[in-house]
Image 1 (tube, rainbow, N blue to C red):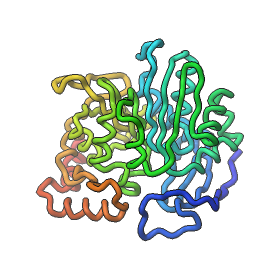
Image 2 (image 1 turned 90 degrees about the vertical axis):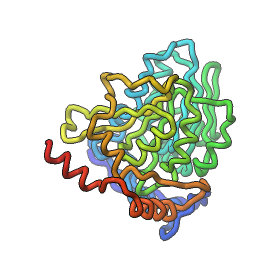
Image 3 (image 1 turned 45 degrees about the vertical axis):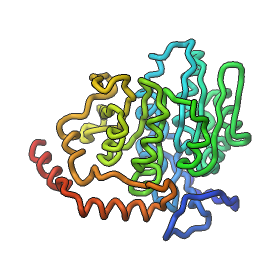
Image 4 (image 1 turned 120 degrees about the vertical axis):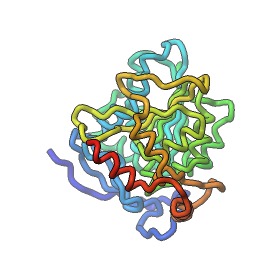
Length: 325
């Protein structure tokens, strides 16, 4: 049964990113709910004009791009796992990972950064969403929304509401993470959370061997992650995605600069085509030196830098590799 297409609005005023040129009933955009191909629900934001998940499946995306690459089975059951979820959204990525950790009795400490509390509120009140999770995970999501935190004998979590660029600085400097989940709107729509400056700050929060996971495969983001000192790998496409060359990005804080990412079942080192992509104008980073720039300012700065750059035009790279396919 298809879910009805409906709009969720709220009169609540939240601290928004500096967004220029956008108009709407809600300062963070109206949210529309829709059903994805795997039966799970997702949302569309009117300001960013973008969905929270790919149409093939919100739950599947969380499992394939965040849960599986996290390789939770490789953690010792006695060691507490540190997790940072940047852009919690409806909570799919966090819920998938916490569900697994609870099942395996792995202790963990979770932090979340999110601007808009409405997506998780919609989720915890939607029967299609609630049935995906155990009662314990539902209670955690509810507590995060209502109280901003939860805690029990083994685990605890805290979400900080607001602009992630600023809120990241409120997490105690001694707190580091085994996993960082970066699931913001796409760089062209939300460059604030993909700037080189923000990615460097995130990389500094990884423990040795820690991983930053994201769906994004953009050359600008991969280049910034490399300059942040991380080893970058490509998430392998699913068997059903034969036309895709990558399904996401994994960036690992290796203990030595000489360490190289090895082939895994889930990911692979960047191939020649992907490495050459990092030498094109597409790899010019998003820059936000003041950490409070608007979307328009960051994009305009990048467009000027691309125009002035001597890097290879991205279309030339595309044509060259198209001939090899």
